[in-house]
Length: 336
Ligand SMILES: Cc1cc2nc3c(=O)[nH]c(=O)nc-3n(C[C@H](O)[C@H](O)[C@H](O)COP(=O)(O)OP(=O)(O)OC[C@H]3O[C@@H](n4cnc5c(N)ncnc54)[C@H](O)[C@@H]3O)c2cc1C
Image 1 (cartoon, protein in one colour):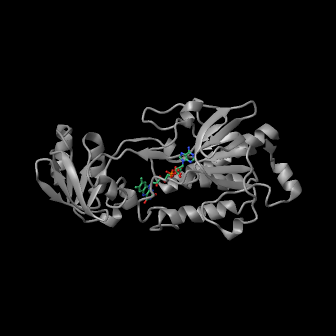
Image 2 (tube, rainbow, N blue to C red; image 1 turned 120 degrees about the horizontal axis):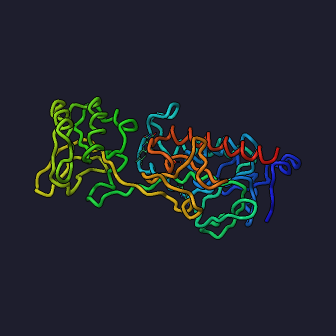
Image 3 (cartoon, protein in one colour; image 1 turned 90 degrees about the vertical axis):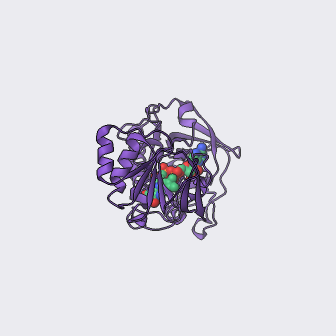
C-alpha cells in the first residue's frame, strides 16, 4: 500500500503525488499521475456530487490527501435547470457540478476517480474500500456523500417528466410554475403540507389522492376555503411532450389538464455500504448523524441528501462543507 501523507506531499512539493481519473479531460489536471492501485489517503469521499465536492473543498484547503470516488449518478440529473442556490440560480445541474469539480481538483492533495464503491470494511488503521473496477484504497476516515435514490411510481409518463414538470419541491421549481394549473400527487399530511406551500404560488390547485382522501375535518375545511379540489380516482397516466406534462389521465377515463405536478415519492439510500459498516438509519431512512455529521460508526461521516429531508443543493453544500471541516478537525486532534 503506497502511503501518501500530507507531510510527504509538502516535502516533495509535488503537484503530481496523487492521481486523478476525471470524467472529462481538463487541461489543469494533466499533471496528475494515473491513480495507482492500493493507494492510501487520509480521507475517501464516496459520492462526488455537491455534498462530496463541498467536503473535498474544505479538506483540500486543509492539505488533506483525499480521494473522491463518484459513480456519476446524481439525483437531479434529469432536471434542466437548478434553482434556489445563490450564484448558480437557473444553471444546469451538471454545470454546477463541473465548476465545483474544477475548483476542488485545483488543490494538489485532491484526487478524483470515476468509479463505484462496492465494498468497504474496517481495518486496523481506518478503512479500506473496493471499487467496481477492482481498485482498493485505504483511508483513515470515510465520508459518505452518496445521496438517495427516488423510487418513482410505475405510472406511464411519470419518469419522463420527473424533475422537468413533475417536481418534488416548491423551492426548487415552484416559481417557474407560478400561476399555472398545478396538481399535487399525494395524500394526507404530506399533501396538506405541500398544498399550503404551493397555494402561495398558484390559485389553481388540485390534490390527486389516488384513493380515499385522508384529511381530517379541519384540513378539509382549510382546503375548501382555499378552493383546492380533491380527486380520488387513481392516476393511470401522465400525458406529456418531451417531459412537459399536458394532462393527467385517471383510471375512470377522466382527465385533468395541468402544467405541473408535485409528487412525493418514496426513496432509498443510494448506497447501502454505510449500513454494512454498521451505520444506523433514522426512522425516516436517513443516515443518523450528530450535528457534526458523524455517523454512529467512529471515523465514518455522512452529508448531503443521505442525511437530511431538507433536500437542496445549498443544503448539500453546507453539510458537506461542515463534514469536511469536522473530519479535518478529528485528524488534527489525532495527530497534533
Ligand atoms: C429531480 C430533482 C430536481 C432537483 N432540483 C433542485 C433544484 O432546482 N435546486 C436545488 O437546490 N435542489 C434540487 N434538487 C435537490 C438536489 O439535487 C439534491 O439535494 C442534491 O443533489 C444532493 O446532493 P448530494 O451530493 O447529497 O447527492 P447527489 O447529488 O444525489 O449525488 C450523490 C452522488 O453519489 C454517487 N454515489 C452513490 N453511491 C456511490 C457509490 N457506492 N460509489 C460511488 N459513488 C456513489 C452518485 O453516483 C452521485 O453522483 C433536486 C432533486 C431532484 C431529485
